[in-house]
Amino acid sequence: MSKRALAITRDQSFPEWYQAVVRDGDMAETSPVRGCMIIKPWGWGIWERIQAELDQRIKDTGHENCYFPLFIPMSFIAKEAEHVEGFAKEMAVVTHHRLKNDGGKLVLDPEAKLEEPLIVRPTSETIIGDAFQRWIKSYRDLPLLINQWANVVRWEMRTRLFLRTAEFLWQEGHTAHADRDDAMAETLKMLEVYREFSENILAMPVIAGEKPANERFPGADNTYSIEAMMQDGKALQAGTSHYLGTHFAEAQNIQFQNAQGQLTHCHTTSWGVSTRLIGGVIMTHADDDGLRLPPKIAPREIVIVPMLREKPEDAALIEYCTALEKDLKAQGIRVLVDAKPTKSAEKRWNWVRRGAPVIIEIGGRDASGGNVTFMRRDALRDGDKIASHTKARDAFVSEARGLLDDIQKRLYAEAKARLDQNIISGISSFDDLAAYFGPAEADDEGGAFKGWVKVAWSRPEDAALETVAERLKSLKLTIRNAPLSQEGVSGKCLFTGAPAKQYVLIARAY
Image (cartoon, rainbow, N blue to C red; front, side, top):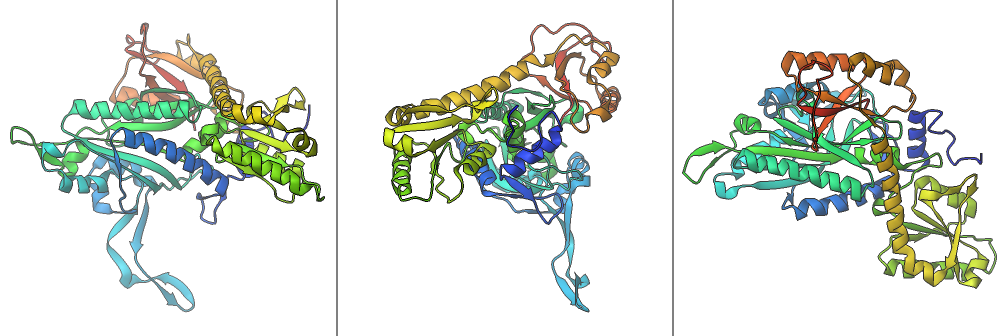
């Protein structure tokens, strides 16, 4: 077996492999602040592409962007009991607004203690709700549809770059509606936006469905998610959309005068995705040579590497490469000539690890013959050998967009086959479920691949649901969602023995 670009493989340790992809792909690094990350230019370029594609979809569905403060008065959070309980253990709190020098040491100035502590934004329902109660007066003001791109802080104890950090980036949509039907339609519409975006832009197949009551967003009536299967079989919650009912409206007095002149509370929603999507892309598409990026989110879709030799003919070679770059840019392709004075093999493997979809290596023979020699990052190897292809320059330019589209489709098809082939049915007892997944501790460092299990579910509530959740927790399992598509539901609930009302998906998850 030929040497791989990463020092560790997925089979050796999936968690360590993930960290290697992030590090060697030059995407991000840990910061001096525990649990936070520095997103490097290549990682930021991926996020910018995600933002651009998703932001347009958000605007196309009628929403407008705005911005709200990072700091939220504690009294705002406390207005919604379920909300504060759900986030209390993760909140960062600001208590003072000044330091002072005390014997050469900086300490909190006791005279600068805030009258009311401020919460560093964990999510914005409460402060946006405060604005909504001022902005909404009449049914003519509805629906109110806004979105913001922002950072949030949730003081996580166990962090992993992109997947779970104390500070992360996201978009959060917040809307207000006249009635439940309109708000629920919004909730499901944005869930579909996320599903389409994940599959068509990230090439990451997902299953959209509703979360069980114990997995709902704090204060929500209904929570929906898109769930993606990673290469180790675990699930990743890639996005959520929540119908909040009138809970937040009642807590913050968000009312409007209806057409009959009566005051009534709004129905609200919220929905969001975050930089966690980048972690999902890594664990869906990367291989033992590093990242493989879907072209639609690659900062550079094509990278041209001239094979420089520090000789006079290098000038002509660079000229050939820059002319090729110009022609590809004219096709609307994001392309870069990497003319750094570094060995071409070193540059090639740098771009392999970064996941550039197409890597072109141009030598003197290519330039004199009017050819292009390239590698597809989605199909880098042919057995033990690197698979390279040569085409006439003009043919390559004319076919480049189609080549990128094919890479996008192939990455999706590969991930979709993995998802479809690894959802297991036919397990009808908790003992069989436990036997299938095996001991929870065996999974900590990336155990054997286990797919998801689809089981019959009676939708137990309250104490019965908590009992189910505790039994699953003992195996590090959770109910991911009940897929929106439910056909031919039959049989008895695996947990209660009651007649099934729907199917749910059970998995280990990030």
